[in-house]
Each structure stands twice: as structure tokens, then as C-alpha cells.
Image 1: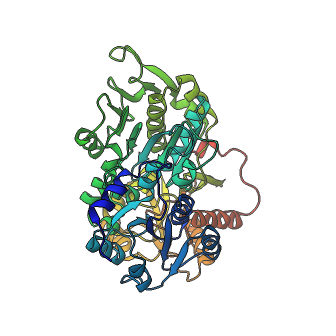
Image 2 (image 1 turned 90 degrees about the vertical axis):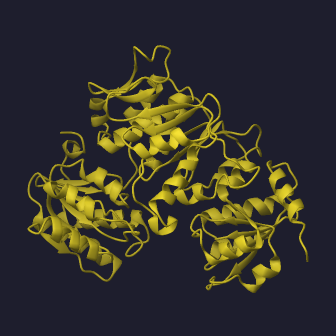
Image 3 (image 1 turned 180 degrees about the vertical axis):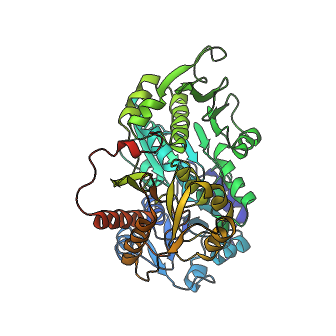
Length: 514
């Protein structure tokens, strides 16, 4: 049946509200993870015809699809468009973040001229379901996104706003915009996968209240194809920003993104960094974290937010954590949160599990779980927090170069324990830059055996004053379900190996406490 392409494009462009007519729209949803199900559930509630296409379907979600009136097409081989998808003839495709941009089903859609949206675009169009739409504060970057989102949301909540952290942090944005209580502001963590799909279609252009890109380093190059494409995706976070574009003064890429962004008139560039801040910046002066952006006389004065000593007491003084705190403070201040509220939040805030988490101190050796360091940039920040390290490293390297990370930290390494499948590049890097360094490998076929072996080997290398640091610089799915399982098994192995009770006073081994 011939399709009136112009009429369909006009209809899709006009669908910018929950209260518009979505009924009967044929939508194929690619993927049935947390995001994919939230998309299908939302569209079914709107009255659209929904076909979910997945290579594998969780049994519970598959049953729920039947309940909500969506159809499931489970097809292990998606190297070509299945017959049922072709027959369904979708007018729109909404893709989950895990689908690679050149997946055969997306190439098929492009050939047929079918619009492709991500869950973020769909949520932006539907954000007015519950009263006035919430403002969106958007956060991206290679590392530190989740911590910054949590900090920002906590500061906003303490400042009196109804707020929800959502997006790549684990709660789909579509769930947040459908919450019946409604919110004043959403703090949205955005991955490069999600940003790849935004601002592509008329009517769905994201317009953040404030936005931040925390940093850029090689990551997910296997997905994007090049560092340039990865940076281009991340840069979309600043497009159409209304109030504040928060960038990292130590990362020239983020500054260029802001300089090149097409923003709403009046939006300001707000830099953050660990050095002395200029006007319109956040930074540090004599151990004091300062705001020189959101005050009347920013040319000659600054507002104190907290001190490094206070952050040290809370276990938040590692340099990369301090940078996240400054970025979150800038975002919160852009929304009017008072400085004293920020200080109070930082006094009580604690990092999530598996983020430079001190597990034990025994015989003068600290054992630290930073399993969340899933790429070289994150591992670099973690390694910099400790003077002498036995490094537990390895996993899925995701196409990134590990050589420079090894070279730059040789001077602080006591030794290394290799885990994971991508070991050849690690071996070569250590042989090239540290031929005399003890480097051992945790050979284990089963997930349960990896960490006990790694811990035993690390113990044989570590000396008093050292930190045994799990900072893998790699993804975890080769041997573990996710980074959390990797970290949990490391902690269990440490406690089982050391036995007995942990030392009473472990605070001295927190990063940044020296």
C-alpha cells in the first residue's frame, strides 16, 4: 500500500504532546530491555499499535507486553528485517540504546525512509503528561555521569524542588515523565548512544534548562566508529540549552562543544576545574571550593561552597570526585540552589558502591573497589588517587588503546594482576613500558574463580602502604554480568582471603586523605 510520506512526516512532527492523537500509529520498538519496555508501555498507553522486535526477550517482560496489548517478535537472527516486521510496515521506529547505529534493521529503516527516534526524543515530546512539563538538566561525559547526576538531584531536592534522577542512571526517562506525582526538574543522565539519536527530527528537539559534558576520552569507539563521531554525539547535550552550559576547563573538547553549540539567547558558559576559577567559573582557591558564576560581583568575589578538608572527611576528596562535585554544584546553582544547601548535602553525601570504595585495610594494605572504572579515562582518575598501587586490570577493552594509560602510571605501580579476555594489549603495554614490573594473570574459566585468584596474586605483590586497586579500565561482560557483580565478587574475595574483622580506622586510606 502506497504511503503518503509527506502527510506522515507532518503528523510525526506535530506529535509533541502527550495530549495529541497517537492512536493507531504503527510503531516498531527495537529492543526489550528496561528502556525498550518503557517505550512499548508508553506507546501502548497512548493507543499506538506496537510491535517489539528483540533477539531475546526476558520472560516477565514478554508476558507484560501481552497484558498491555503490544506484540512481541522474538527473532534470534536479526541480520535482515523479519517478515513480520516488513508486514507490520512501521510508520515510526523507536530504538533502544543498545542497537548499533548501523544495525541491519536500522539500515533497513533508512532505506525505506522510516523515521527513527530514541527514547529520549519520545520522552521529550511526551513530557507534559502530568501538568506543566518539568525542566530537564542533562549530564553526559565519558566518566562521572552517575555521581554528578546523583549529586545534582540531591542538591535540588534539598533546595526544595521535586526532582527525579533518570535516564542512563537506571530509571527510564519515560517512567519519570509518567509518574503521577509530577516533578519540577528531571536530572537526566545521557549516554553517547542516546545522544546519537536526539535532535534529528522536526518537533523532537531537546531543550535542556542546563547541561554538562564532564569530560571526553576514548570510549565506545566500537559503537560510534571514531572518536570524532563519539564527540559529535556527546556535543548534542548542549544544543538549545537555556541557562547554563557547564564544561570542564581541563578538557578542551568540552569547551569547543560549548563554543560551537547553538543555544538559546542568554545561555551562559560555566567552566569548572580544580584550579583557580575565573569569572563565571567554579574552582578551588586555597582549598576552598568556590562559585564565581552565580553572584552579582563575580569579577571581584566568590561564594564558598565547601572545603577540601570537609570533603576529605566525607571520603569525597579524590580529584575526579571533586571535579564531579564542582560540576554538580554549577548545575544546582544554575537552578537557584543556595550555597549552604550545597554544603549541607556534601557533608552527608556518599558515593555509590564500586566507585573508589574502600573494602578493607589490613596490615597497612588498602583494598579498593573501583569496578565502575570501565574505561581508561576512569581508571586513570582512580590510579591518580593513590601513590603506590597493585593494579587489578582487564576485561573487554571496547576498541580503546590501553598503551598510554599503562605508560603514564608505571611510576606508581608495585605490580599488576590481569583479568578478562583482552589481555594481549595489556601484556604488550607492560612489556614495553615496565619490563621489570611484576605482572601476573588470574587464570580462571569460571566467574566465581576469577576474583579469589586475583586477590591471592595481588596479596603476594602488595607491601605495607600499597593499595590493591580494582580499576579494570574495561567493560565486565566477558566474565561477569556487569561491573557491579565484578565489584561484589572482588569485595567478597578480599574479605574471605583476609578473614577476621576489618581495621577500625580505615578513613586514612580514602583517596585524597594524605
